[in-house]
Length: 234
Image (cartoon, rainbow, N blue to C red):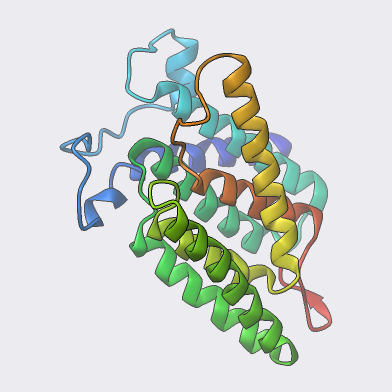
């Protein structure tokens, strides 16, 4: 089964790489670097093995496929044959796709965030009716923090980052959102320090923040599951 889940991870990683060039077509302002058509190229890891490294974003695509394989194998070793594999896989697919798109095109797309945010809000409210206030407070807290930061530093955070943060706030509620944001902030700090040490960036370098939000959310899901009633949602 480990091999099966590794291959499944490779497949979903490859699929995310392909559709990451498709979803940005729904953006109001389409990026200039957007390919004319989805290439449906072979898996990036296979191309790297064959030393075909001249494809755009080959390193990112290979890393996505490798991370997907590791994540799916980890889920199997942790959860086994459990229905929880479904929500964890969906959460990973969403956050990984948002990450890849933001790195490539600096976009956090409404077509992804709005439906996901509505779904998370509905599920949490329906399955945890005694925690509605907690869920709403989580979204409100994330909105105030990120919207305020975006107003102070317009070139730092965008509207997509604010919407993504609100979605994560709904997912974890309050004070659970603090744990996810702390993990994301820690990952950001490590990245900035590494960029400074290797001289690949400066304190003025603009970086996409959505990947760190997504990392914090996924790490928090793995380290601190959300309890819904008498069972676990994530």
